[in-house]
Length: 313
Image (cartoon, rainbow, N blue to C red; front, side, top):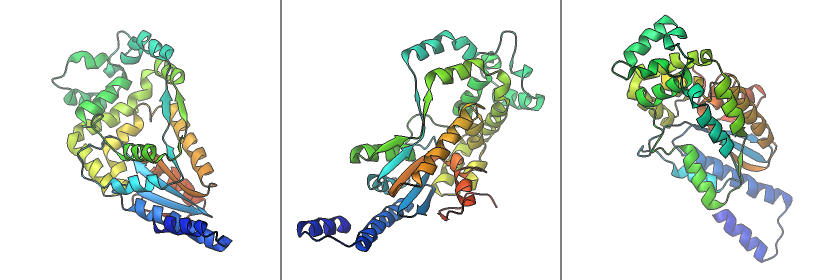
């Protein structure tokens, strides 16, 4: 606020600052935004390049709306950023939705005459039987893609409703402050549906193994994941079975979609490094902190990264 008042006064009396002074003011403003962002209860990293700064916010899904954390710092940082990068968005037409309905049998059910036991390793099938005990037997012929998602939500305690994580907080702040927002990419509805229709069941075997582990951990595992995120214990978040399942199941774990998501983020980060001022980028935590992810890539290129530890010792 003081910086803005000083700038207004300088313009009012027609004083033109020297180039060095202007750069000092800009640097101070950037640093102020960075310091503000660090106060949030979320994993945040800063990379400074020339006269610009990139703030990476590691977001996770399923943060309960009633969770006690400090989103105000993120809101303030978002309002004072020069631009914000958000995750990809899906874009579907009415024709796409019609095709989903038309091919719903293919998307939601296994091929006729087969069950999960025809695709899963025996040990995974046995554990799945225990997890699903008491449920309607229809799960046996459910597509592995749908079964994985249902295990995550119904058995592992991952919340899809009444949530408000970093993406929601920054989205609201950016809209109210009219900060320019860019999506790092668009996932076309027709391509996503084609993917769902044509992928063989074997594609999601690893998803089911991870989802069963998450279901065995139950809601307690989901709560540990949220608490580790709030405490910035990044390796602990990634080590939770639920986070692993979310990474291996659709869409993040799909062999066609996953490389596209990562490539789009790598391209967006590369472009942001060349922009002046503050770029606030909100990405899934695992995409940032996984082995070979964005943070590893930036570190390998020699950038100084300030923030919590992201690799397990």
